Image (cartoon, rainbow, N blue to C red; front, side, top):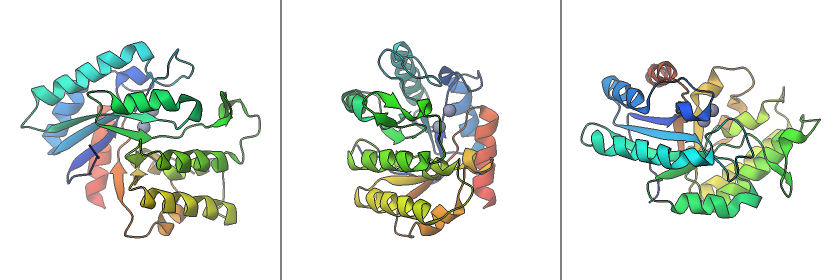
Length: 239
Ligand SMILES: [Zn+2]
Ligand SMILES: [Zn+2]
């Protein structure tokens, strides 16, 4: 089923499993979301890969527990708030079968692209590169390829790919143009990311100025704690 944003939604929430979030329980996030008046909370923790080759995410062995916990909350709070269980995933072609399997897994409602690195060659990754100044080109290429697969509902923080850039020139503009066009052609939503807005060089207004009003966008908290989730919620209503 395709993911569609709803009003008063808290989108893009992480859990303790990723290793760089607060240690609150998933239920605490849900209870706070209800208290804030949210109609839905969408968990999208960082997806694991077989044999755990990458950091900053749950281990593959923890995936069943994640699905069980979030889907349990879905049942437990049914009628009070809608709970979605998703995953944030880098598009890595060598893992296409794994990502397809995630998409087809019972209890997974949505996949979002969170392109924190990209595959530079078969099973070689951009975090191994010594010079990362032009990494946005590879990140944009990967997000664009990912958007074409039909496996993803949303592209999280597309503009974060410019994190090592200091100005927005022709190459930056061209990468954005191709991604926006591809996302629109494939009905993939572009996420404006609150966590990006709170740090320098992660949120690029120049990118968002290029997104036409007819494109689908949403607002993601990218919360790694209950407090950050609340902060994003309050911010979204201050706009
Ligand atoms: Zn994270
Ligand atoms: Zn995230």
